[in-house]
Image 1 (cartoon, rainbow, N blue to C red):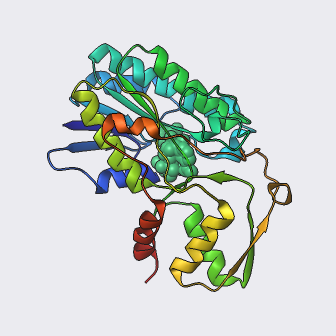
Image 2 (image 1 turned 90 degrees about the vertical axis):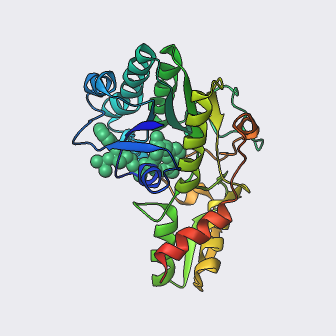
Length: 283
Ligand code: NDP
């Protein structure tokens, strides 16, 4: 299987590069070779490629900045994936795209099913939803993998922030009323390769939820990070209202991942993924 991946430096792209299954090759396109601000150029790359399957692991992920630069974020998160999906449809190539829990409004305390009505709370979620809709409208074979709370040993993420602050401080206030599934990028990479093989083998695809379990709050997650990293920093629960951010975050990010069985996959346990990340980061 020859894979073309948009993205090179991001958390998921790096894990896709490190976790190539046997018999799979992949070419990774950084911003220098494929800028998602230029959707037509991304489509042209696909038109000329010799891949069997295309994965988009690049995105505008600056959630708060999207509030003030929504038009630019929309090109990257909405129009570029649409152009990629249409180029894939023309070539008959399966297209795998990553989306987010932020397409939901975060109401209630149930897990969101794949077909639950979407209602993003902010600009980032709106642009990611536009990407989902454009991919679905393209008419090709696709998987849209919605995930949440992505963590890894690379880039900027919650685990790295907690390790840094946990080493500096005796106690830390962390939001306890947002609940979701921390998801190791390594597990997302494995799932994407599994789903790509499934699409090539004729599985129907569609929208899928893929999040680590068990669901927890950011504060619970922080406590687990501190404990597993051997840090004595005490994590205090605070409400989201005590930690204001430009973009509103959903309180409920639980994703119903039961559809994964279609691909022979299940929710990964983020605690074992966390241990592997800590092994890389904590010496
Ligand atoms: P990162 O923030 O780690 O990386 C984003 C990547 O996108 C970087 O490689 C960045 O490149 C690239 N990128 C951004 N803008 C452009 C552009 N205009 N042209 C080309 N490349 C660009 O992302 P993750 O790996 O964490 O996220 C992967 C996917 O998962 C995304 O679709 C995201 O929306 C989704 N997701 C992420 C969550 C999270 O918690 N991080 C939660 C839920 C979903 P550069 O280094 O050059 O800036």
